[in-house]
Length: 244
View 1: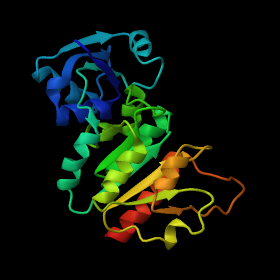
View 2: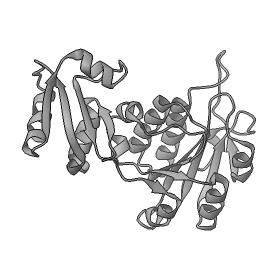
View 3: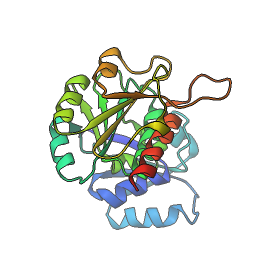
């Protein structure tokens, strides 16, 4: 049976809330009995899932030393989304807000972007199949449960997917340092996709050319750019402000 490892209380709680049938087994730090973990373990026990009490080294080994908060679970793989799912996602959303991540390869950044996307009410996060971070245990932990509720749509050809969505009325706004106006001077209402590029390289050329509009985040200090997850938060919440 194929499976994946998740860790951290939020990530485990998210699967409990969305699809508890995915649990295969759970390992918990021996002697850990705090008020956050006990209710989670009680809910898992009620499902009939095996819970093993193990030492810290066993959990550290499973997570390559990452912060696991005393709980690691082996679960069945979650739902995988692709370009064929986008039509249904749009059909179920009155005023869609999408997030496109082009070339974001760090799972910490992917997880942080998913967390912000969930908070901002994003309908789906779209990434290319190639040169994109995997939704692994690290990304799920950083996402704090958002990875289980925000569809992460992996597409074969990003520019082609963007063109297809444009035909359905989605306006694509990309972020680029060379843009001639900033995020606060841009209308971010209506069916919208915000396109964020990788740190340093930014969006790929074809992605940039497929955008309807380019914007920048004003930078007043000595640094030339923001971390992609921080930049995503700035732009998404300006869209949220305008759309309220």
